[in-house]
Image (cartoon, rainbow, N blue to C red):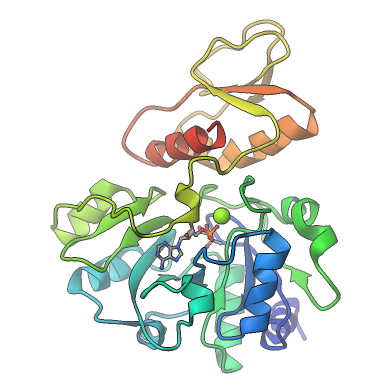
Length: 308
Ligand code: TXA
Ligand code: MG
């Protein structure tokens, strides 16, 4: 059996499989298996009422999980799937409380990473309905963007039968854009590579504001946090780490940990840089926020939370 076939079988048997997506690595389980999903929460140390995203291979599987899907959600699906986007839709009976945190909605995503696609395709051929997967980090910490990051983060908590698939470094680097599709127009719950402008253009609709009763754990104030203290837009002192666009020089005595040329690179390098700060034992990291309305919005969002 190929490694991916073994992994699909492991999911079917109720084991956990960490796998690459284009955003970040996920910690996957069969989304219909209550005890397998319970292990995700144990391994991550995540509160049980936080909903999980269900990953599927093909749009035809969306109706298994969601009902009353508005037309604009299909427009988004056609435009951006497979890709770094999660749609929150009214759930069917297949989406149990242990997936949705007892809400009446379910988050769905079709990732584009070839390893994720092959895993989801093989799993669905075995009769699997979908793979529940949060980011493969301990609760509140920085999401992993490589297989070694997953191993360092969760290795000790995985057991025999669990697997980590290696698909290289995540290309996007920050988690998917989450879009609430349960009202008359879309609302962005978590910014990502699919921007508000892109959503407006595809749907022709003005976006609604985020509804506060929807629980998005990634919207807790303190999240995505390394051990080092993250300070935003401050003058770095000697011994501090610095994350900033390459156009910004490094003051003497400051430890440069990332020097991206643009916002896309910033997103790709961000979590690796925060992990590097911890490996170096830095106490403080200064991040200079990128400007702009593209993926820079997501970078600013994560940096603000990592420092909260
Ligand atoms: O890019 C991503 O989305 C990655 C990869 C692995 O797919 N996954 C990810 O999962 O970031 P997680 O669990 O770390 O973050 C998903 C967020 C959580 O904050 C959760 O609260 C929210 O999605 N979410 C899931 N289902 C939801 C729902 N039905 N309503 C509102 N928020 C939901
Ligand atoms: Mg997460």
